Image 1 (tube, rainbow, N blue to C red):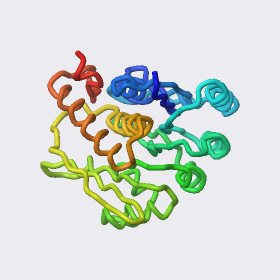
Image 2 (cartoon, rainbow, N blue to C red):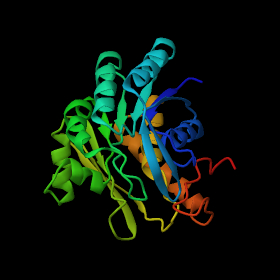
Image 3 (cartoon, one colour):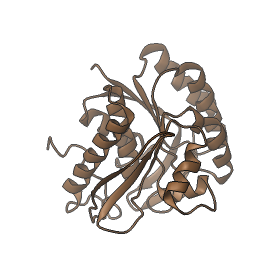
Image 4 (cartoon, rainbow, N blue to C red):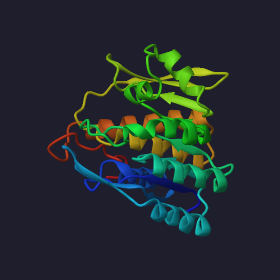
Length: 261
């Protein structure tokens, strides 16, 4: 168990998103997964029935317990829910996660449309956590919530880059067309990552899975661009394997272990 990945994220009892999806992804890609729970959404494939945040002292205690024992090779940050949780996680990572790659998936809304980040927490996310990230992976609605009144994708990605991450991966899943196009952007380089679009209702946890896969490939020593390419390819095959085999009555999960069973 050479490669160790930490997910700091929310819970999904139905198994398709959150820390459950992250652990499956880490394992499928040959990494040892650890978790710090930030929030407890009560949800299934049909939607979120409620959300309970974890007290910040308990989140900090979880972080301390992990870092005192098993130093992660890379970190994925997902659902944080409130500004107090963002501040706690950001302050800890700034102090203890020096030189560890951080993948930030700015989770704001569930696939069902339910809110997973309180509106008053967005500014705290922008000012305290995004500048610590090696890469942020927003979809278009999340990007437009972070940067208002900007529509054109390259301009939007550049505005996100101005917030301080090393890399922006602006995901194009909400676009139309036969191709799935994500924009990889640094201060010196940009590239569109393109694969065929899969028409499927089973898209629960795709954002969590992609960011966790990037985290796994970073732990294994890949650079940020190659990690994103490999992660996108992994998600593509996980979606392809699940598109005709739904789990649940709503948006089903992807098949994280498509090449095993």
